[in-house]
Length: 225
Ligand SMILES: Nc1ncnc2c1ncn2[C@@H]1O[C@H](COP(=O)(O)OP(=O)(O)O)[C@@H](O)[C@H]1O
Ligand SMILES: [Mg+2]
Image (cartoon, rainbow, N blue to C red):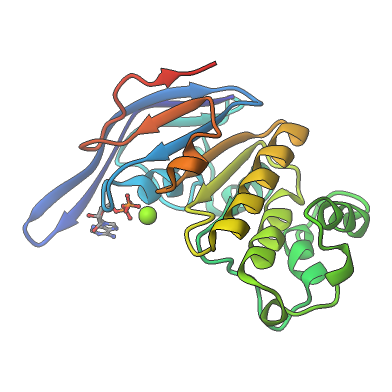
């Protein structure tokens, strides 16, 4: 379970404090999927980075299965993030010199990782339709294929939380549809908590819970069942 309580984020600027997020509160259970929309600059990425423990909040709390990651030391936090959280960004962020298979395996290169990572990587790449591209470099793939590799990489450690920041933002319509379908399908299969920031109403519309970030807050959300 993900519990976010009274989350606030301020940046200090030469012209004084700048409040980006103020009093964000919600909770999600395993298997939930939500979209977050909002104008550019409204703090969507900031919220996602805090939930992903890449940024810390100014105040408020985040707990994932009862654990507050911001109470961990740096090393413990890195281990926690590696195990519990998967990211897909607008830019695929694949390593250009590594093959598709190697890119997907990168999160497993830490101590205490799961058994049989290669088998799992191959299975995920099969699920995103790239089993015949294992040895290709990212430059040899289309934008949509790269995002499908990024999705497999995000899921390799079976994370509880899957965070996507405009995952289809750089893709043509057809590739975006395919990535969106795979995202939903893999989320359902793995029962993650999926949070997708998007400008694309068609992508947002795929999720039963939709949040709109307005003036640093999320007004009571609509649950469409
Ligand atoms: N390190 C920072 N210092 C000051 N302001 C920042 C910093 N990072 C982001 N911001 C500001 O926070 C606001 C929200 O940014 P962001 O979360 O990227 O918005 P979105 O993803 O919704 O477009 C923007 O106005 C941005 O300029
Ligand atoms: Mg953003």
